[in-house]
Length: 222
Image (cartoon, rainbow, N blue to C red; front, side, top):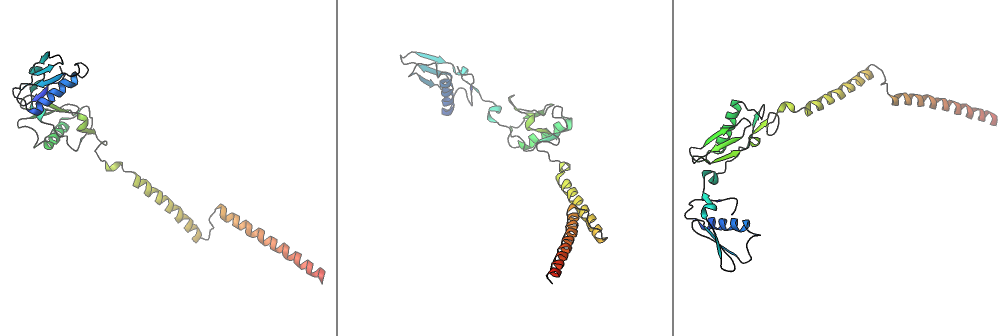
């Protein structure tokens, strides 16, 4: 016998699709059990007969295979698009629970049977109880999130633009200092400038030596 019963609108008069589901369930539950060539037929009340190749039969009562469908079978609650930001996802305050209830109600305003009740637990898990007593449950993890996480956007966390502006201001301050020094007639104290000055002095000295050497050579020739 299958572990799960098929929910049907009328247990005394199954539709063809409901009979097909019962037959599928019995077949799947006995795929390694029945002799090859066995036939499975389902009656109007769900009673199922297994006819073996030798003509012998077994019968499973419809009460073991079908059950009256409930509001929960017919309804699938919609989950709100937005989670409620809460201080502690394990212990919601009354106002946070009220917000979760409002969100679930709004998301299902045209979906739930009239008279359905919505209750919210401490962790946000929400139970929808239908008029016939059947229930559906939505996990709290799909309805709430810790403040600053998940779907919650906190603009105060955006620090990247501030860091970028600080870097720009720092660079501008350095540039302003060098410009002020140049206006005061001071050469920027950098390695490149010192090297240029040294090369200039060495170049002038070499030119002087070469000049003296050329002059002495000319006198000797004369």
